[in-house]
Image 1 (cartoon, each protein chain N blue to C red):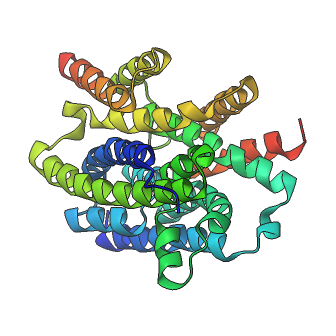
Image 2: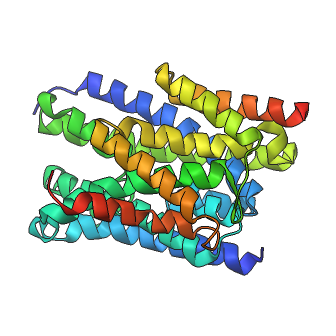
Length: 104
Length: 221
């Protein structure tokens, strides 16, 4: 990957994310009062974050690949069900995945 | 004026330290994805919204094009506009302060501020600023530590970073799944992303999953 790509992603992402925050602070409240827009906007993070779990957990490029990462995710899910705090969730997933990776 | 809301400051600081600490994971994942230590630190300084940052570097790490990375990060950032609309009438700031307030308008600062409503308007403002600026400080500090650590540790799979990143996303979506309808949206989005993965370029399934949100949110329920 070229440094042009990384700089483009860095600068564009930063600019867009700050612009979105500023927009919300300057826009009149009624502009985003539309009920449908609010319903969809509330679901967007859930849809994207869920898709990201899949894309990062069981996908390599454009293929579904089951490997050590899924073991880590399963442990993370168990930790969440047991109401473990966030750092425990992430670290237990990493440790499990690394163990499975090295056992193979 | 009300006395200094000490409980508010304590709440805010504990959130700031805890959330800031997983800047380590971002720093390490960003370097593993091919960003330099400098770029990684600039990400946390200027993008400063965790889910978008993880999404941008995650799409690049999985071989997706720059435009997918930027679009996914941007869409994840749109919720901050809604937070900002809620916070603006509470904060009532102008000029440079307003720009700073905008930059630190994230999940945590808004969440703590709104949770302080029973303690009054001043507590809400203190909650927002202490959480926002506190997360900013610790998130950037830990990003640097993670970025430097990743360079030393090498192959991300051998210490589990490739599973830590999806676990972060799972941990971020989890507290949002408050009822069965929202859980259904999450499961449908995962199934949709799996289904379209072989047919779309890397990174696009994530953006395409926004269509699940549009379909499910279209009608009142």
